[in-house]
Amino acid sequence: MPLFRRRTSEESAGNPQVLVMTMARDEAEMLPRWVKHYAEQVGIENLVVLDDNSTDGSTDDLGCTVHRLPQLPGPGYEGVRMQLLSGLASGFLALYDYVVFVDADEFLVADPTKHADLPSFLATRRDRDVIAPVALNVVHVADLEGPLDADEPVLGQRRFAKFAPLMCKPQVKQVPAAWKWASHGIEAPFAIDTELYMLHLKFADREALRRVAAHRRALVEADGRAIKSSWSREAEEIVAVLDRATAGVDPDRVAEFNPAEVDLSGIVEHKGGWYRSVGRGQVAALEQQPLRRVPSALLGKV
Image (tube, rainbow, N blue to C red; front, side):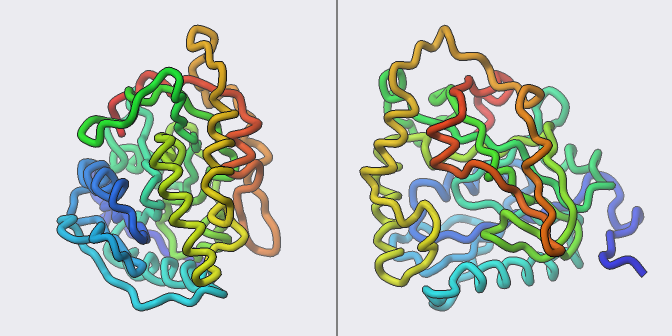
């Protein structure tokens, strides 16, 4: 008997049914854009936001399903979060072909030159139990780009990015394999698919980055959550990393990102029955990866 069960072809006729979920706290600037993007991809009725005790009203009137969580523990927070998300995903897979988990600042886009949207992309990947995207940190080159207009797509206002190996996470699955390591790991094999992008917008606006980093640092100090992550860094330190990574950019000398040019072979590691993405994390990738133009086909898509 196989360890995991896929839905039958009769259950999955046509484009697959996809549920997208996130877990968020005080994400007033990002959640409306998240809901709009994924509602256009899979339908607003197929979105779930887990509200981790927001105080800024960000989960009010989103139009999708919002479940307000009780207080999560500080120590052990990440383990509890992964247990919760994995359990919910397993349940949803009784009804959906795929479950997607992304953070509120993470936007999946199937290669527009090959696929109309996320479900049509997944219709061509029914043999893949778990899929990871090619992850790009979208960056704000403040010398060339102004503040973001919240009513317009980010990609176009922002045209530069850096590849982020560790962010090539197993975010899409059609089997009830549990996530681990802040969703960078999973108990099933996976590969990075070069026809699926994840646009990470944490660094897409300098002043928003400052505000969010300060708030996350305060959460670390308040209850100890995510203490080993970039959340523990001071806001000015994070902003300074962005400034150094985008200093002195000559736009005429920046090539367009091409996933065929990056080495994906060593990113997925198998260890102790788990598979996980490894490599340079968000901040290290920002400091060390070469600057690239966002692929032109993605402009206007987020």
